Image 1 (cartoon, rainbow, N blue to C red):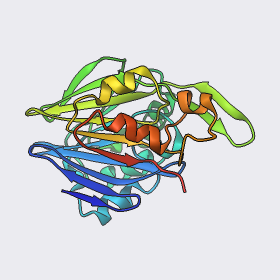
Image 2: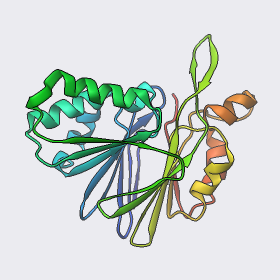
Image 3: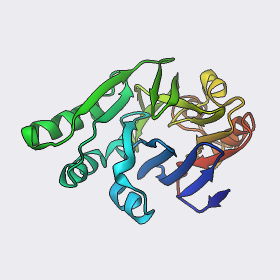
Image 4: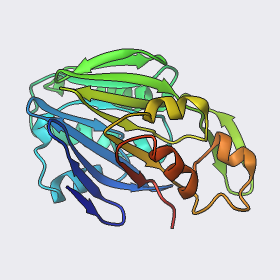
Amino acid sequence: MKKREKYSQSWQGKSLNVNILYSRAGVAQQIWVSNENGSILFDTGDGILRDIISNELDIAQIKAIVFTHGHFDHVGGLHSLLGFLRMKGKKEPLHIFAPEGCIEVFSIANNFLKCYQDTVPFEISFREIYPHAVFQICDISIEAYPVVHCGGIKGSGILGEIPALGYRISYKGETIAISGDTGMCPSLKELVKGADLAILEATLKTSKGANKETLEKVHLSEDLAREVGRLAKDFILIHKGK
């Protein structure tokens, strides 16, 4: 069952549930994946607290936060989320995973701990994730896939490539692929192939007239994302522009 709204969507499988709380290119992205053991949050863009509360999700169920990359629209709400969990008196450990070299995520979390030192009632653990690494949360297996993503500033062209990962999530025979932000790279198809659900960024409206380097190194277009999505059993396009 899927709810097809503009910036928030949901999907319910046999064993895994997905709530795309919000995803809009250059603004924010947050994806909530859960099973009976707890919830994992993928990315924490601006407005993360409003999105969790307005969707009536139990913030106490968050066991881990997994980041695709360090751009502001994917990490901008991290400090607010940590502050809210501190205020609520969270006791269970929180695990934070991010690509190797993702300085934005680890800087925000470490500065939060530096600000509040001994008054954070829960332990925060950090782990840098390498391409092809496999780790487990809530009995869910997560495999990291390298993707290609460069930044950009209007008027300044394409910037350098940053650490970025997509994730393939598996539990009780069900599989979900999350692309993160990526260009049309070879590992993207490997990530998506055969998944029960693929969640794919589609920032550009169309590939027609788009710069080839942008499509290969920065973002997918909706038509290219659909092409990749057909490798899965079902797909949802997110992270769209205006």
